[in-house]
Image 1 (tube, helix red, strand yellow):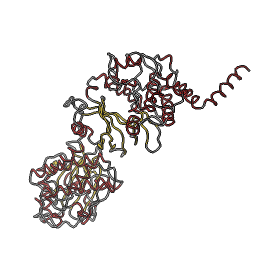
Image 2 (tube, one colour; image 1 turned 60 degrees about the horizontal axis):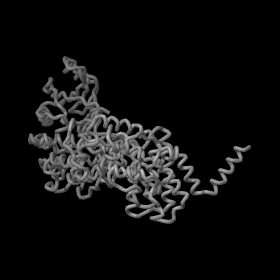
Image 3 (cartoon, rainbow, N blue to C red; image 1 turned 45 degrees about the horizontal axis):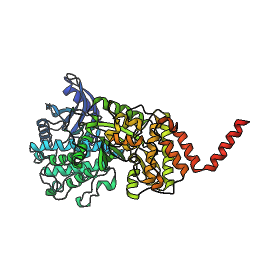
Image 4 (cartoon, helix red, strand yellow; image 1 turned 180 degrees about the horizontal axis):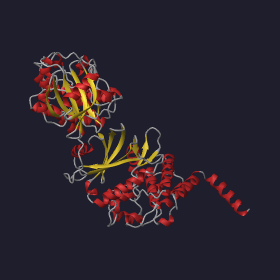
Length: 586
């Protein structure tokens, strides 16, 4: 559907088309009569000089009040110069016709777009910026538009918005006939419905009504006191957007935003604003910096892509947030990396490369990586949001876990590691914080595949682990900066299982050097000093998984899982070994 006037067609279209060719044939090729009424006509034409399509809008009856109205609106449109207000290229009279030539908009009205369903939330936010910015501009020139309805807001195929109608603005009221379009009532401020010339806050109401319609797919109730909050009709509506809309739709003008600019700024300050990447941005201080500072910067960087819901945690790498993906309307976990980790372009390149690899690993016990992004000096990635606690939080709140629960989680982790290792991906940063346990099923999801290697420095002891602040679960070869492989992950998952059973960090905390020294002593600390219900055969499996030398560990996650099954069901293991010996002798 293209730019069109929805007035009924009563005039002979052939005669109108021919008359347009007669009057404008010197400069325009008339392509189509789009719509007409007894007093108006809209054509699409080709400007032969400027080589572009234009819209030709003509008024057919001279010497009438309606002609004065048309001319007044044309003068106002030509006097306003704003990218959201449809530009007038030329205007004048040809014989009995008054005309204006304006931009032809390849797109559709907001009404037509919403007829297919509510607009995507990012598109609504873009609409809000466009409309409030245009209103603020018009108000600075003492123009109150008064009537902004979905049928006269056009959306180009590029999502650019145009306000096309100034017919009922305050400067046209003395020549405009009564507005008999009852469908416009929900979009008019109550005082405008009563005939008032309106104030800037009247247009604020109109903008709020327009955003309500775009968000929910339905017009707001005519009675402002009866308007249902948008989130009750569409739960994907961000809280900030609902708050701004409902304030704009307040029955009392003084309870609304006093200006459209104030309305737009309020939404931007809360939800963020899309902007192109910049070369630099103010530095964030240490990770102990106030959360509000992080949130303010991140909200602006996320723009129309994500709604920030809550902070989930923080660490040496940055912070984790629960956010809503506004395009796909789902909650995801967003991890924003601290700028001190990503100041080096080589690190950023590694991060993007590893994130692409991690996104290709799909497994029931691995949290899916969805996307990577960055803006305004920040870099983040999004992953599946798992409702539940990580193993560290679980132990913190409940204490050491039942042995069978830990073993089940360990089995699930080993199936995930087997899947990843067979595809050449080593986690390198397995720790209780990255072992997520779903509330609904109790099953395990491993998070952050690929992050550790992406952020690993090129030199120095400790690698990524010393940066992330979690050396306690890293294998000796990793802390020493030596080559790592799948057995490195087996070491870390063994220590995580020990932590789940005992509630203690196996080799304690402190510096990387002190942890390396304690690891060199050899075996895991005795579990029996903490609890006596762990079978010795299971402890031997964990000890082998956490052997100091990689060659002394299990050769693969599959071998680790097999040993774990045998330890839990020793009689089955004995039968299986006896059967294998019989087969070998035969």
